[in-house]
Structures are given as C-alpha cells and as structure tokens.
Image (cartoon, rainbow, N blue to C red):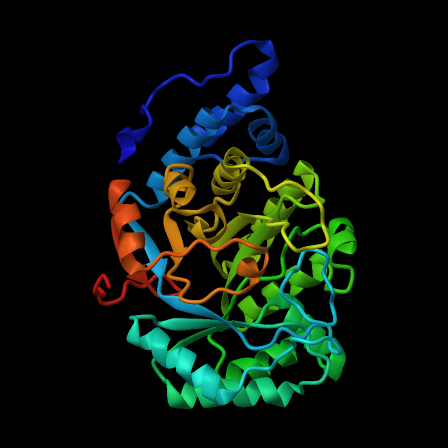
Length: 376
C-alpha cells in the first residue's frame, strides 16, 4: 500500500514563494503537529499530489494494516418536522406544512428488522427540531428499541437536537444527555455541525445552535462516556479559512476529551435548497480530506463519503488520508432530498475497497471488527 505514492519523492512546490509549504510539509512528514500557519500553507498552496502523499503517509502511520473499515447501519429519520428552516436543507417540513411525518413504531420495527437481516449492527436516528414531541417520547423510543433489539447499537440524535431539547424543556445539556443515555442511547453522531463558525451558521442555519454550543454538547457527551463522531459539510457560504477554524475547534475538544472516534467531511449538495452555489468538484473535496487527516492528529479515523461523492471519488479518498469507507447506508433521505442518489450494497463496497488494494472489514461504531458478513 505504501508504494501508491513514492516514499521519498520530492514535493512539487519549488521557488521561494513556496518555502512555507516546504516547511509545513516537512513538519507533516515527520509526524509533528501542524499549527494554524502550517495548515494554511498546505491547504491554500500545496499541490494536490503533495497533500495526498503526506495524508496517505500519515494514514499508514496510524493504520499500517492494509484494511479499510465500514459500518453496517441505516439512517432512520424519525421525523422531518423542523422549526429551524436551515437554508441548506431540502429535507425538512415546517410544522404546518404538508408532507410532515413522525415515524410509527411499526415502520421503525420493519426498518430495524431489515437492517439486522442485512448484517447491520446499528441504526442512526436523526430528525428535525420537532416543536411538539416531549422528551419522554424520545426516551420511550430508546427504551423500546433497546428492550426489543438488545444487540442493536443506537447511534442517535445530534448536538443541535440535544441543545434544542435542553432549551425547550428547561434542562441542562448534561441532564438531557444523561436521560437519553439511561434510556438506551449508545453514541452520538456528529450531525448538524455544518461549519463550526458562528458567523457562518448565522447565515445558513440561524435558528440552530451556535458553533460553541455544538462543541459544548459534544464535550458534555464525552464526559458522560458517550463516544461521538464529528462532521463537516462544506462548500456553501463559508470561506476556506472557516473550514480550518472548524478543524482546529474539533482538535481542541479532542485534546481534552478523546471522545471523537472519527471525522467525516462532505461537500454541500445545493439542489432543492435555498443556497445557490455550484457543487464543489472532487479535487476540492480531496484537498480538504487530506488536510483534515493532517490537522486532526488526535482523531484516529477519517471517513470517505461515497454517499455524496460517489464510489470512484471515495475510492480515491482512500489515498488522501481516509481509512474508513463510512456506512452501508441501507437508507438515506437527507442527501437524497438534495438530488444525490449514489447507492452501494455490501458487495459493491467490498469490490471498491479490494480494487484499491485493501481488505474490507465491517466494524462497530467504536471500530471493533464484527463477524464477516456475506456479500449479498
């Protein structure tokens, strides 16, 4: 695997104007932590080849074994009713709008049974900021799921949902998290991060929690023993510097808590939303992915996003710092609502990983390998 990029090839950047890039690249190549100036030099000025070489080398230092992991799960959106009205979201329905729903137990059971039958080990539950559901509704749902399917890992909700409930019900974030954990919550996904810059969030999601509040929820979750992921949706109304703000904010929390298991960046999909921009091309995604691997030296795993980028770009991402292929994604509705409809089953994922020269390994949320599943 390490021969995909020459082990000691010179960096592409020549000339005095690239001295900062060469110094930053030398830091990264030697395994030293990047400061903000070094990250800026690499993100803004380094060639894509240099970033790939550095990020892949770091990936191999962290994960020398020739494997790529993925999780068997299903995204279940328990409701699309939401009061946030984020400008980037094509999925939500306002409380008084046609097409809103709250999932029934019968439909939830059918989805979970199908997930387990396909070799899945977890479900990811996320929904809108519903104005009428009490906190007990979520607690009862978790208790029912845990009692009915004790083998199922429940990876559910997100920092904006947690913060919304804390404010709505007059509770602390810690109390909301504690009650959900006691009811059956196993871990927290990193949804709703978008860009962790409060000014940007005020533009694209003004009714959602701030960047500081998002990070605060995650820190409290980690203190309670809940592992989480972190995400970034980029390419809407932020500047490149805001993306680096996001990475360094996540790194600072991880330094304190060590609670993030993975980082997952993906590009904004603008179709059917209220943000009129062109989708970022694959090189922009790979550049950010590689810089993420280099900056987030304290987060073990970086996930490729085949759901938004497609299988070919996701395969290439395995040489730009990613060591994980994300999820089987037995069901996905939010990205699909924006007009993106890539689909892959287990055999497709295994084929893409093997073609890249790696061995596919299914894992749990905390990256424990699971019993090999049939490729159907």
